[in-house]
Length: 175
Image (cartoon, rainbow, N blue to C red; front, side):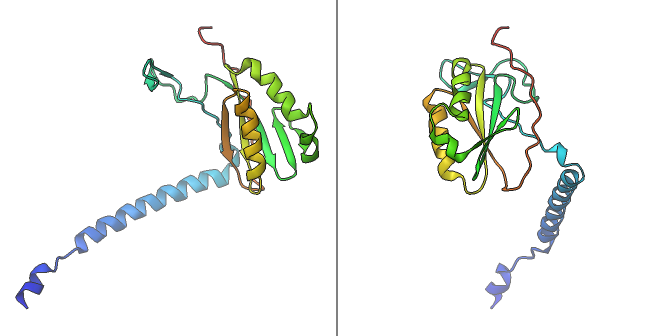
């Protein structure tokens, strides 16, 4: 009976610390949500191939080169393709391509890939993936990577608007 009392520990002090930490996390979450609700334009598309100030070393690993600037992608110019169940929307421009047109040779998506492929060192494609487009996204991804073009994926809700902000054109390396 005496042994049972020895094993009981008073954890009430630690519980108060846990509740305070949970409260702080909840306050941070609510404040971030309030910022997005008040001004939805604060949520913008940002595609990143690799962190600015990083490059592949001789070992193949990313290594820091100079100062890291948190300003987004400075290496490559993104071309965004919004993948919807009804077709594709291209940014910049907002041009639309229905699903039926993708089966035809020389369609808008192939034209985009034809334009980006020669400049793949300085440009890449970002697919904005919506619910119900997994099979189509896999086919588009295979087409992009099959041409040696880098790809990025952004996952969006079905009705989430795209707030496209034109990025600065990436300058060629050394220029």
